[in-house]
Length: 251
Image (cartoon, rainbow, N blue to C red; front, side):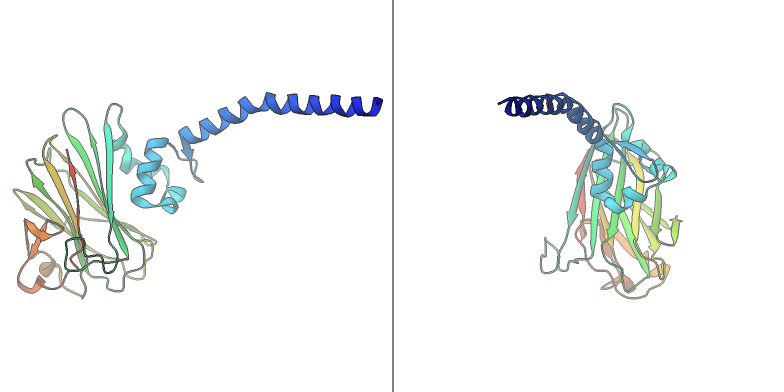
């Protein structure tokens, strides 16, 4: 009997200790969910983590440096409302286009204050492209316009970061030709610019299916009927690009 009482007493003590730890566990879990820190000790908010991982992938966040995060700082200014829309196309899923691809993902992010919106368009390659020529990434405006002339376009990969300023600008938007790096992996093409807080932004990325020159990649106009609701190619650029569907976001 005495042994049984000792066992019951021991069990009560263990259970009491377990209950005392529960609040600590809950607080710890809440803190981890509220902020995220990667292997480089870059700490971001829960919302920033969701946006970055959705647009760029978990591996990108895991390896992101503090200097990499500077690219996103405009999005997460205090008082800004952030929204992301992404669209992935798959083989045999036309999604309103004549051709789609299963090896890349396009997304668009907006972050708006009362005076203007920061827009980031991101094209993430899910596989390594075979053709490495001049692709085009750009935007068409409907009821809005650039808030300033700052347009930044970059290509990130295992070879590093390269910036491109091959801008072709129209009254209703712009496009930029980018050359994909040879022998590189983990390719991400993204573009950041600023617009007025009204209207709709349409974004498109078109991949060249054969090797072309920079001048050929610039043979396009911007129109709703174009690839991704943005690009209409003409001349030697006709039939070159893969017609990937685009994304849009209301400001």
